[in-house]
Image 1: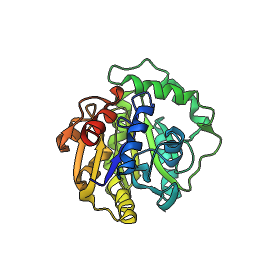
Image 2: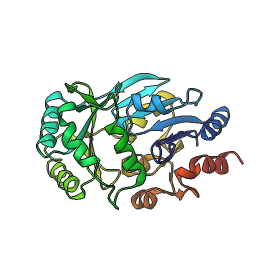
Image 3: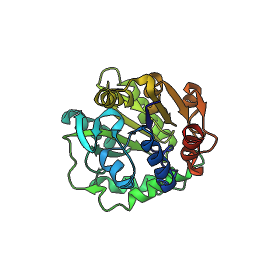
Length: 280
């Protein structure tokens, strides 16, 4: 293998959103031995840079599941939703009082201040048994964010729309609403848990974004080892020469993998796996 394409949440990052410094050392050793290091994530560029240690070796990354591609920290390709689509989608969510986030490549997520009341009422409810601890904790942190709540939303350069609810029936109804309209609109629909939904631009995913990186570095997909844990990793699993699922991955990802890590993301599973596979 000549390159690693690594997911972030649930793979590089543990469930509290931490980036292991031990993993950085492992990646640095792999880089010294000639391995290219790529990230392929649903996170935006702002979210990637804010969490990645400065000394982490990184040749390039795919942001927002293919909406932005960066080489050496420089943007080389990007796409975005049409502003009127974003406006219509957010209005539909607001009518149903579904909590939403608008993401651009370079800025953190945004939600209208005027929708804070119904969002707080939803997210401040007791944690349902169907929701994971880290997911509930992130929702609480969002409520207290100083940058989240704005008087006016950006509709230009939007790369991801994220929706969330502690109310399982509400988010399921919203997911079904989005799924029913998928064929008539230019978006792809993902979910990383039964309590959320993510909308991306159709035709853009981690595989298309990684293809742009590989062309730049003259590397074949057959020489790429992808490691991930959730639904938006599957397009890349279909293309890569080697596919590994984290122990904490969904069943669908495990079924598509060549192998599974011995440890979860909360047990430094990626570090242990890479050392056992490439540094022994």
